[in-house]
Length: 242
Image (cartoon, rainbow, N blue to C red; front, side):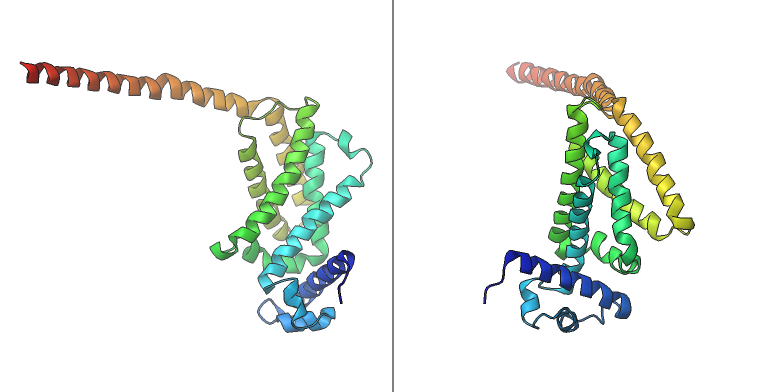
C-alpha cells in the first residue's frame, strides 16, 4: 500500500528521533538498524527504504536540524530587517539551541560526521552545501540593501563560515560556563569583528593588494625572464648563423 509523502516524512523523522535516543542509551556500535526499526514501528526491511546505513541516519539528523533552523528563522518577526551580524548570530545560536536536547548525541556523533572518511564525503558535502545555501541567502540580502559590498571571494567566505560552524560546535561541546555563556560571547564577538571587516570591504581590499603585488612583482619578473630567454635565443641564432 502506498503511503503519502507526509507519512514518509513523519516516518523519516521518527526513525531519526529513535536512533538518537538509542545511540545515546547504547552507543553507536550497539544501536542496530533492527533495533531502530523496531522502536520506530518500522519493518526491518522497510527502514532501508529510508536509510541504507546507520551513518546515513547521522547525516540526516544534521540536515534536518539545518532545515528546522531555517523554518524557525522564517517565523521570527521582521527577521529580514536584522543586520548581517544579527542574522548570522541568530543562525548559529538557533542551531545550538536545536542541538541542546541532543547534546550527548552530538558529542558521540560529531567526529563521525564532520571528520568523516572519504566514503562519506558525498553526504557531508550535501550538508555543507545546504549550510552554505542558507549563508548565501543571508549574504545576498545584505548586499542587496548595501549593508556590505559584494565580496570578491564570496564562495571562499562561505567555506570559512562552514569551518567556523564546525569550530563553534567543538567550542560549545567543551563549554562548561553557565548556560553556555562563553559560547554566546564567542559568537557575538567573532561575528561583530567578521561583519565589521566585510562592511569595511577588508576582504576586497586585501584582494586588491595581493593582486597589485602579483602584477607588479611576479608578472614583471616573468616578463624579465621572458626577455632574457628571447636574448639567449637571439644569440644562439646569431651564433648558429655565423
